[in-house]
View 1 (cartoon, one colour):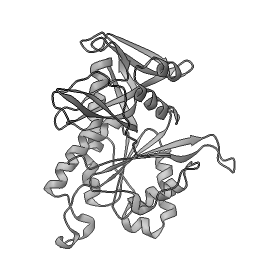
View 2: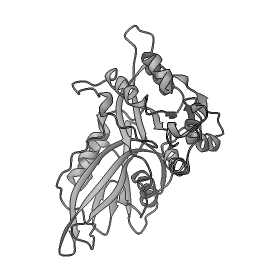
View 3: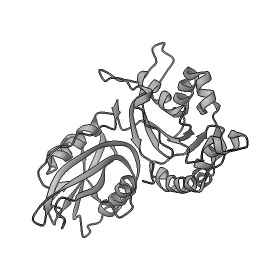
View 4: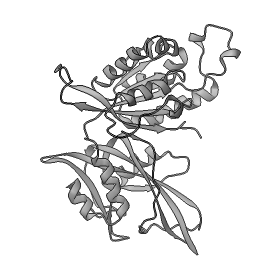
Length: 334
């Protein structure tokens, strides 16, 4: 199971200069994939300015999050729209700067191509859809090969849950009414709006929430866009989770098994232990599990939970799901 721990490295410079030595250049990209006759095919693009083959990527615009930049750059360079799934990795390398070098930091996501077509443009003059092994041979830079290695570690067909902690709702001690009805504050509404921009990039089709007004308000705009009701989830409230953690884990797996990616809003007293228990029951191999104290859960933050579909359960009752990757996206408003 992957947990967003990224190993920086020093790589062959890939051409994109900056004018500020010592500056950190933030960028994002994606392994854009589609189903091919022999398995998944990934997009590799040729940039005539540098005469190289690379994965689609580009610099963040001011105020832009990596996920937004990844989707935008995919569209600009390839002509394809996409839906993000799991976070893959972060790579660090040096790029030329006036009088020296700067560090470039690139976040990569897996992204399913949804539609569109390629046309040569000012940045990219050729695109090839290739099996991962052939793409790895073609790319010009070692870090792109390692991104493809991470992409290939898990199957493309994963069940996704976006587990979000509700946005800011002030202090419980400052609210005189029923805590179930405590609403979002102005800061919380700003976080809600940022999440409304971010989370649809991952293509949720269903919305679930702990029965708390602040949780429901956090995801209500997305439910409205989808034209779906918010499914109440008592086990994902703090009280419900504490009363029966095992049942909450089982319920989360059932949510994951539904049709399409799910969005779930929960509380800070439930999320760390819930994610840790899912990790302990997942297909971890020789990787250590997570302890609740290691699971971040800031208000407005998101865990991208990716579940592997196993062929059968141990008792032969059909397919089962196990957590295969858990990736943390911080509060979308720094």
